[in-house]
Length: 264
Ligand code: LHQ
Image (cartoon, rainbow, N blue to C red):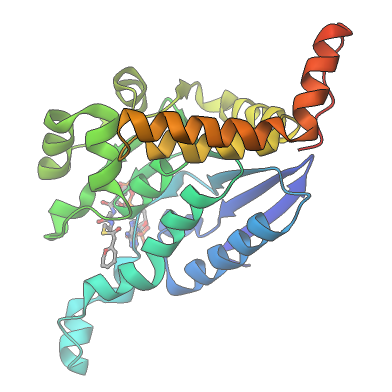
């Protein structure tokens, strides 16, 4: 069975991490599967939203540590590995592609999200988590530092004090606390997770997808732009969205008192 499953339905590309026996820990093969899935998300017009989730009881336990067994690698003479190289080859492009995708990315965190698995989850545009989920910045427990965007997302989403403590302790954060702190969009009952996340993905997939893509980029730029640059970018994105058929349809449907039919 493939370690990444994809299914396109109602404009939503659902991408499932599928190594349940290892809590969907990332392997090289899984990264290949994710690259192929992202190719689809980027190139197929029929894909108007992406939904990530995990098979089984976990969402993703981060890097598969079995792929980097120090004892084995010492025997083979390949220790220490260049841990940064793995990031540059696999994780960094994945996170950048998710953030650059001009389509909404929903994450349905169904179970524990640890290490790179936690920060991959947080790279989604709208993150739902089941009540039983724990987010764990597990890196410090194996002598490593956060990756997959954690040092960018955490201080911005929840502030530096909380980011520092989570990263330095590796203590688990409950889904409820994550939602209270604004780290994720919503914590939902375990058995309601997929219905809620799929509902949101479908809703966005039949929305004004072009405008959603533009606002995604503009909101991200707020992390680095000053007010003048932001105002310029708002004018630029407004110009692009305003030239789109969805703008005309949105206004006409309002005047005609009916639901809009956006083409994306
Ligand atoms: C696993 C894993 C796993 C393999 C559970 N690998 N098998 C990037 C590039 C370069 C270098 C390295 O790092 C990175 C980025 C990173 O992500 S570093 C962080 C890597 N992840 C971790 O350190 C987390 C390790 N896992 C855990 O701490 C626990 O498994 C958690 C807290 C996630 C879940 O605990 P439990 O619910 O108690 O489950 P479990 O520990 O019993 O795991 C179930 C099975 O999954 C078990 O196998 P087994 O054969 O005993 O049933 C685990 O060995 C396996 N597994 N995580 N990352």
